[in-house]
Length: 132
Image 1 (cartoon, rainbow, N blue to C red):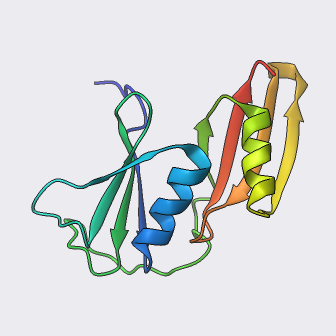
Image 2 (image 1 turned 60 degrees about the vertical axis):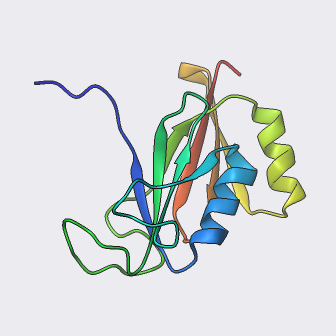
């Protein structure tokens, strides 16, 4: 057995539409209905350019196989979600256009530029741009 890749992140939110709009407009992810038995009102999946559903965005009342308490806001033990991206300058322009708060970091040793920003649910995103 071996892990092949991170499959997806599940975000539980009181506002599916705002979360989907954020990820669509900022990261260019495509919003689609989740498969049944989930419904368009309780679950949306956000697809990347390779047609992978990398974000599952669920309502607070969405049925779950593994039920546990959900607290909105900062994400407890998970500090951030990192996404490998390209188009650093375009991302800065998008963030500036929306008046978003963000921080930049450079890791010279691995030729990496990073942007840190939060989604509407308080989830810290680390956007990684290699080769910059």
